[in-house]
Length: 395
Image (cartoon, rainbow, N blue to C red; front, side, top):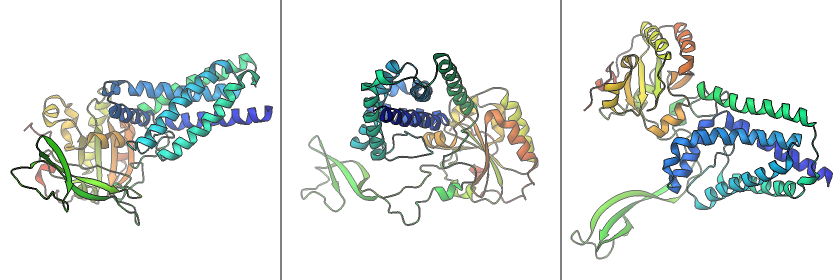
């Protein structure tokens, strides 16, 4: 019994620490996953608090894992672990059986698990934790109380400090599809040999106050324009494929609605992209951005501002430093993945991410750009709206 208890204790403790550390590398990833759950449940009002929830949950996972290993306050932590694993099992079970969420984010983007894999993992952990909970009075500390407190103290400091660091900078281990060395256009393609989703065009019409759906090859026998009022059409998935591109819904559009994604990402030249979400950070880094802009201009490096901020807001409120970047619109969801800090700076050539930096590391970007050979002047992109060098006036 004692051996089985210790083995269960080690497995639970190590798994919680491992899971927490992976998520601590990218707290925003868990925050966005929480938002996904909240939106499905109609709890959108909690979106502004998901990062706080994420940081606290990740820290607790690491701390609880260490507490189990050292055996500190096992009566308390056995209860906390039981409540936590019941909550996790509910989430993964919901993701699996509802079909509304494909991945639960249990191990972040570094180890993506399918909904069924996550659910099975949590069921196994639930059994182990129930076993520990039932025998919690038999679990003996492996360290003296003072040593345990010291270990837990430094665990708490590390858990929060590490997350603070990656939120200011970028994930220490980049597992996102936009990581350095990846080619963005290639990651936008469905992998070779993969089977895409099979869809059928579905129409929604209204007849007699009721909405009726039917496919293009199965129109109602009594169809008549005077009886049926068109509502919408959409592509309905009838068979799921076995793969999807790593990068989805990423596009670079001018403020005149021209898609320049492929044109820009296939240019054989160095390019700087400044990714900016709506609630971007202002401060002293803008001075370094001005110097970076000057260095890029001397190297003939084109500069682009990728954002979901409306043109009117940019025109009125954008810092002066932004006016030296060609504005491009991008979907807000795609920006969340590309820019784990806000703003984030990318150096790209031929669609390949050569380097990227957080806004707090703009000086490092300046050093890298200063060492680059200058671009050979190339003809401008044919779409004149994509070569304007200033923030557009609002339409």
